[in-house]
Length: 295
Image 1 (cartoon, helix red, strand yellow):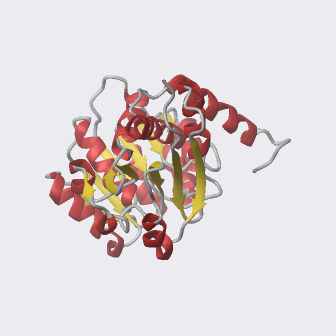
Image 2 (cartoon, one colour):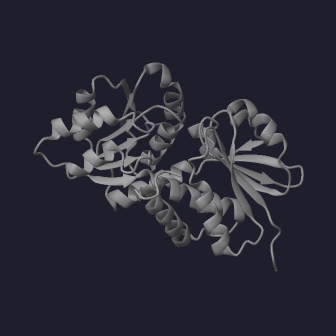
Image 3 (cartoon, one colour):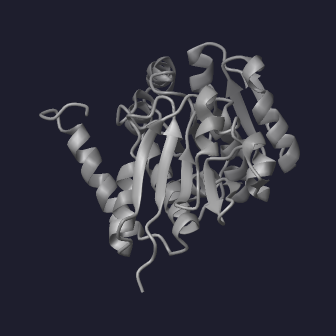
């Protein structure tokens, strides 16, 4: 029996760069969900409430990116426990004919699975999180799930650390939060870490990457870096980490794994991860090809 067609979308601002449509459309095709659509809708925070008000039973759900992951919470009918404790919603599920809007967090799932690709079965050693936004809060939850409830969180200013500190308190984890300081000092901290999660925006860690080359010198790193940025790919930080012998997990791996959980929640079907991974690999290869340039 065929299933009714549903709509889904990713909201954020800006949104043109998003690879979520590639992943979700590949999943719908592999699952045989005819008529299901997934689009990218540029949505500044000021337009979020009106956009949610237009949702009806024809919608399966929404993916959310910045700057909407906290702003959406008071607009929802229900927030799932993980999303509530982390304080971050990146997924909205549309239930019933009314409809009811339910907030969920699949970023933690994506971070855990991506870090597992680099760590294998190892428990993370000393952990460092760069940044203090929504993804940093999810990173603390992921590290705790992997067996590392204590992490050092380095922020660009303490004024940005409130979200992460409140989330840590709700989760019962005990991070050490401090200001980054000079790039060389940050690089020294990273070089001693067993796992690093950078949640900084593209190019924000470039000076740290340059300092890492100088700090590491002839030494070899054995830690794991997950750089949540994936454009450019590799990032300067990922390239410096790889040059020093460390294990790099690209931000696109987190994107893939969080999307597989969104697909499961929105469709009720196990996500076809192989098809989604293949679609992601293909579009990234095209973007990386200098003959094509950035779309």
